[in-house]
Length: 245
Image (tube, rainbow, N blue to C red):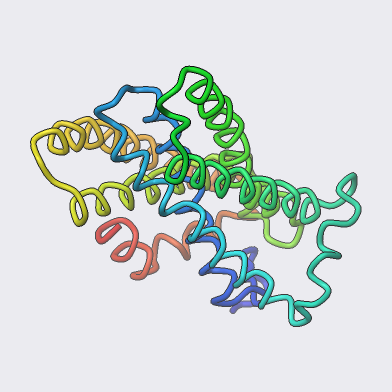
């Protein structure tokens, strides 16, 4: 790098963090879509089932990667200390609570008959709303954490949490659709997939707009402008994200 350039490249986070970012986003996004679709009627129940199966395991594997990245996993509980002043501590609590809610929802959905009674359905709906709140918080948390990092100016914009939330919703949504195609079938399933396809089209449009807004917001300021230029020159971004993504 040119030491006089404004752009910065972080070197502290490696592949374990990248795996968490992806799996955490997939898990939180899949749960949000699954919980949302549970309010759309019986036809969307397969998407709820697939989403719940994806959400907790993805979060669990991603969290294991987070703990492994600490270097001293036995002291992982210290990450939750001082939530009043630390975004990492706040995020630890948010992710932990969300994992409990997603696991509880999965167990109640598959291993009880709560959906067959009015009181059980009410409890599942309350759990869905609470889970969605913590799922969105999990998606947004990483973007907020990056925004609070003073070392890299490209991250210091309110558009970053929005991009994280929308991107997680997209990846989680398409993970559910892939699961439905692989493990379910029938005329009813085709109707549900058509609804999911409409949701997907809307989410993709929102994601493209969010990315463009992030780049435009960063380009306005001289410090992160060089980072935007580097990103737009990157074949990995243009091919990997814009084309293959």
